[in-house]
Length: 225
Image (cartoon, rainbow, N blue to C red; front, side, top):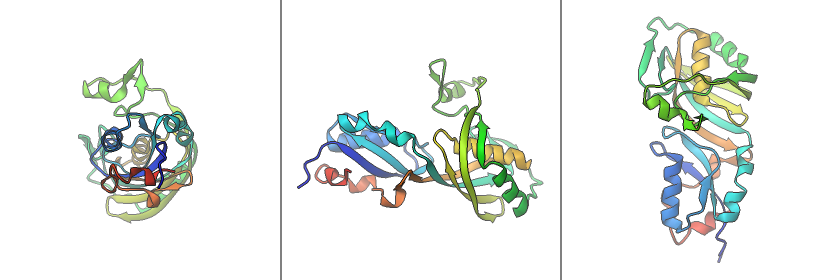
């Protein structure tokens, strides 16, 4: 029987809970306080979350944060929200949206490479020691410096009316919400993130990840690697 008490677990995060909620649930199940994750997913996002269990694992979890990521995303074209995703307040609507598939493909291709990206106000990035989303909730908007991020590929999966499905392969630090917002801006119709699923972190795949409800106090260590 595997008696290992430190290692990593691949979790398939469901929609509607924070990445920290996943950690809290696992702490309650496993009974170990030293648990952390490699890369936050927003509550609306689903998919792969790599979790480190135990002191040795949490000390080494940063190695996963530097790995490239892959996402499956849906973009709603023809509107904007203050959070750049479906959970925000709609602040702009374009009822004359007529963008065609060629325009979309050309625009997606223009974002491949190293690009400058401004972190969204509704993000966990800290400015002067305070998380941006905390300021945003107080109605405060601050100037944010752009950061260089790497987009390796954006594949157009489908276009169905206002809904565009894409697969994105990118470097660490990329905000997919900002990317979808910028795509909408470049198309001239506005856009926001409708759904997001992280499908891979480096060589680790969401198809190999485990559901939270399948992990209990008796079997948790069999999921460690």
